[in-house]
Length: 353
View (tube, rainbow, N blue to C red):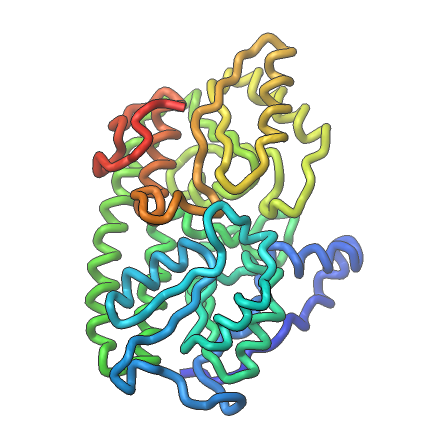
């Protein structure tokens, strides 16, 4: 297993040719990059010994997003205490740590994060934790890069929203099991067993999403959202996505972007637009007003979960519930067929938005 310390971002020079130093700074701070700090699985620096479970106690794991937290919690079971830093509808693109967050990471046995620069503003924190000898691991580290989206506006950088493709996100589950097994070798078989069980559920979920999205009439199969978080969803499930903002919510939508989207919606008679739980609704309202001025009534299909899941303790507060909600709401709002209460009949919002 590779053993190296986490390093800060250093290889920005190759992006200068895109459009100057200002773009470089935006890419490093945003979510659209691929130069994450290198994962660390132990280190010769700092504390040295890693793995509380080796002494009979539980591992202390810190995660970033709720999606990563869900994987680690499912795979670790009762062998770890898992704490997520990014709460509720907080936007991971914009998230910056406070003193207590850094303290929690430094006190943990390991830190798991998404990677692909989703948590770009935490790069220095990951580097600091790595220098202290703590394992810092991006769960997307071993994904096949041929399967990742590389948006044209960010050449050389990958779209980090991989959880929108359930099959692709499922690949991260095995990565987490491997890393937990490295921290706690005596329980490695247990981690793998739980990972296998969780991946079976994800395979069934993936099948459900494919089925209900396919019921949307082809001429209405357009998913219009606040920002470009659903590219993997589109790629995996055969629906075209149109977004007001780019991949990072750090970007700003121009009036021309909104007008262009209004033209597309009116021309194609798109019935619904979707808001996101972690993104401002201001731009959505502008699009709806623009359509009304053109004589087209555009309804809000539902609030989707993109960069954050539902409330903790709810079905939608799990990754499976999040994706069940999204697929069910999208299908029903765009003229497809899906059970009102979702794949497992557990959706808490039983009314259409």
